[in-house]
Length: 158
Image (cartoon, rainbow, N blue to C red; front, side):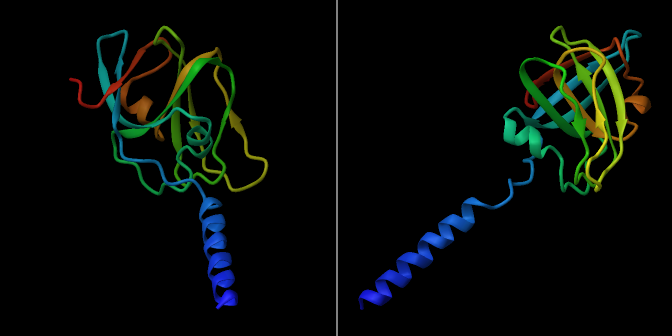
């Protein structure tokens, strides 16, 4: 009887330990929106998943096989940063726009998937507090570029 209790307890502890070592979950469904406005009056919107913790930012869109035409991910930082992004284990090509504290796009880059180590990094030309990833070519297709405006909002707002 004692051997059975010890074995069951050990198996239970192992299950908890294994469960806590799992890879981070895939990003959730888009719950926010980034609205872009060009200097010429054009506009575009992206429904975005949020990455506002270190773990979420590290995971990003790794393993994601498809984004809708107007979907992406917003990486939110509490303070201006100059850190770069990489595409390690990201399966789809992406565009990224870096946005400063005043809501102005300071850099737009195209990024390619990478499985090698090390992968290239993609940085901004100035400090930023928001980085927005979308399908490759999104910013070119919509006419959004450096100097244009970006605003992050909850998806329910108009």
